[in-house]
Image 1 (cartoon, helix red, strand yellow):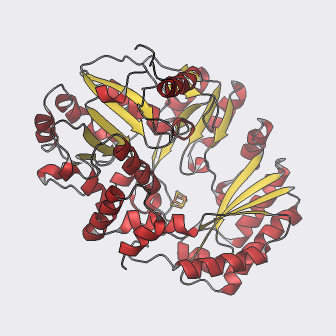
Image 2: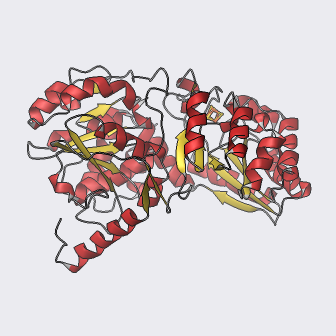
Length: 482
Ligand code: SF4
């Protein structure tokens, strides 16, 4: 690829080169094949490379004989969009595939399509446009909005689709590609009026072990090889889509994991709860024996063990992160969190004993059953953590967002006014030394709307994004009725 002549494009090109230079290849990926597929993460490079699925899906797609898949990221200053893998401009790719894991990333997709002069709604696209394909976590219980935007939706785990995609992802016209996609199970093609609701779910995760084929110094787990050791979750929290519907939880075979830990000396273990992995003690032994440095994505309060936390801390992890979600048993029962007061106390002591001096605690508020005491108790629990001896206590608070696919899907999010009143109460209850971070209620509301809007509201929301240069939250709120 020749260097761009304009200063602006050259800066963009240089930025992509810089990202590419931050990477180390773990596995050789063959970029061969005549059908060019752009895998576009709808967020910044650092966020993209912190997600195992981005590089893993890239690897799986490049395993299909006729596909040449290259990675792209979406950043505000970009206009041409060059691939991370060969610096090829996006225009040269026939299929634009977006992994959609998070509702707010949809807004990035809308802005991105507008910037590239591609219609947001599939019904306004022409034969000359790329095929807009969606996959990812949001396709398990697809929000209606996605059916109005995507030309193709691959529902569920990509591994389960590979065999059928092999014959479809070959160079052919846009019309033929859509027609062939529409014959496949678990794939929606809205322009051909084929809407699926059942995702394909991989029976196990060992056929294609989910390991990142490339790592970056800019990822959240910097320069660590990410290994998914659990998919789904064994618990059933009422607010969580992962626990409510992706059953059973599937684990990476111990033998495969042991082999990986002998090869890679710097790893991030990814799971809904690393502490649910059934062979954690054996894994710790391999980690210690092979001097593996590891980090973990998340821990479950009532499954913590001192040995595990001590090894984690001895490797330099500074912050101990737990998710009580609520400070009273009554509200944890409403959430079906399955954690007792004394288990939270024990977890705080265990973390301190293991050597951690920082603790981060996640809470949910905005639950219709909660009262003033339940909210004030959050401050009391944070105070308790300070008394245990942590130097820094961070409380991260998110409003309850009832989502599709969860036991709370028929609930509505509390009004902005109620959420703000509750925020004030919680803030007042907090000890001065604590750091308190609230997710802005407007952001939570927007997620709720994007997740729950029915077809007619989704249609109106899309029109707003199509018409307005800078669509504001108040505009979206004005069309949302519940
Ligand atoms: S909140 Fe965590 S523990 Fe509960 S179901 Fe979801 S992933 Fe599992």
